[in-house]
Image 1 (cartoon, rainbow, N blue to C red):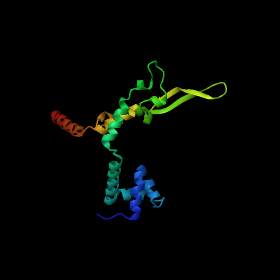
Image 2 (cartoon, helix red, strand yellow):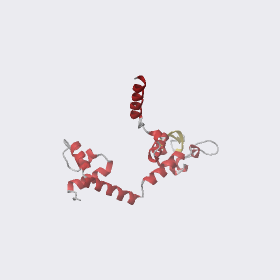
Image 3 (cartoon, one colour):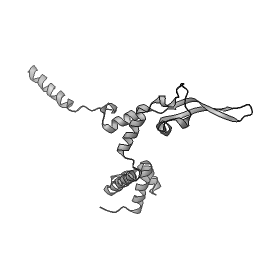
Image 4 (cartoon, rainbow, N blue to C red):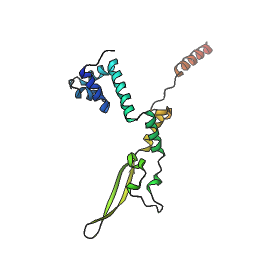
Length: 176
């Protein structure tokens, strides 16, 4: 297999940042005007694809983040219980007391109000509103990962064309 040029190697490094081939080509020093075409050409090269695959595998090994990790994380997020954010009286707990899974991305936003005494000194805070991130999207990602076809935008049915042809031929034979 041919070695990568310095520019191709730089493209591979840049591609791994955001998986955007056109932007990676520009950042690697290729012409911005022709970046889209150059990116397509680079992505079609066997040695570039091999370098990207090797770099991804290396990164996955270094970070210990792989498909199994992602699936476990998605499952934990999908199963997280909203009740864990509330205490026994039904009041929302301070953020520091939330389970880690909620603090690491399940909450898209929190509105809170600071409490101050008459002199303006902060005496505490309370949460007004918690916006939960899109949990349905997590289920879709899990479904796509394990091959649940219910999450496909378009489901193809194979064999219907030949069935239609056979029915047409049968209809023709019966009308003769």
